[in-house]
Length: 569
Image (cartoon, rainbow, N blue to C red):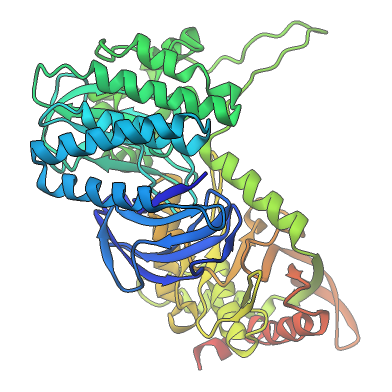
């Protein structure tokens, strides 16, 4: 029943990781979803959660130690279970990987066969995984590298191949971009760490697969990799059967049927619709736009809908010349599908990785955190006048949202209880202020983070928010740009929404919902006059923020919102 946990690849460029701290020790019980350790990558320090449950039987990399991706990190299993065979096997496998000598490969292969025979009688998931992986290792042709679906974010469990930038038969150099992969947070470029010829593509464009599934194979031109492909597919089939994931059962068959064919067309599911989409625009079936950053910038400057431009680049990608040569007359009108009166009609749209992540995280927050709401109305006369004067400075154009971020950040420094985070075994009061800013994107919602917002000027906050929002809409946010928030702000005022409530972005303790500034009659000095007000609603987690605590924070925030000059002192 033991599960071997390897050093994960937590970023697209990560080759090795350092264990910053272990949150569990040998002998501790571990539940699925528990944080095992904090791992430092080349970009950030991330929490690594367990996908299994059991007892922590062995720690392979101690705190402060650094190891390559896929090194033995830990072993989970039943209390008292004998794991000596796994430890020995792990050592031999590591030695084999470093030396790459034929003798050590044969030794590992013989041990693997014995392990496979002994463990097959147990009929467990771990035996299937280890025996298949070991069998594949023993059959690996010289010079061949198997590339698995990488874990590109700390919460990523599966990924979708948005586009392949190489096709079977292409030469690949170390550092070349192989594909664009959609995670639960963003679409990222995935580069090759090897050089050779692309011999096999395991996951076609638009298809979704679990982390560590067979993504591609690189090696010497003409190398037969059918044995590796078949072995990987058999392993994947057994894993899926054991987990009873019926929607995934057909994936190995699709891969097998295409294993020797260069990718020339999209997956056959909804082929008619996809072919039509390809011929008319550069968008995929789920609305993704394949275009270079420069092409997107040119299209934005020209006010052109880039989804209507037919791309001439690789895989239909829109490039600069496509935008420069595009004229609106060359595109067909956007005709809505005719539906007869009284006839039911609908369209099924597959859930994106982002939509799945939103459903999971917000559902968990809503049903685990006891939400309550505090509503306030602020006088905005002084802020309107302040903004008008402040924007007269050269090269300055701050928004009301920028000013609210600054005011919230300063107020949070005075109320650390609101700037807190809830964990199962502790409550963390943060001395730093990192503001998460909710940004709407076509697939859903992302929350990039403005770090140390209380220490930044209004101009700095404005520039950073614009940059992060642009990256969010182009799906170019990096994982570290969406992590570490201590408080979140959601603003729907620009859509004319006067008041609303939000769901807390865990592990934060609160989220502020900002409505529109409206003109209405107000009482001033005993007289009814025309005034400008704004309604805010703060959702609080009652486990960390009591009602009086939240109210005191809003009083402080009111002082800065209604007297914005204080933010500059």
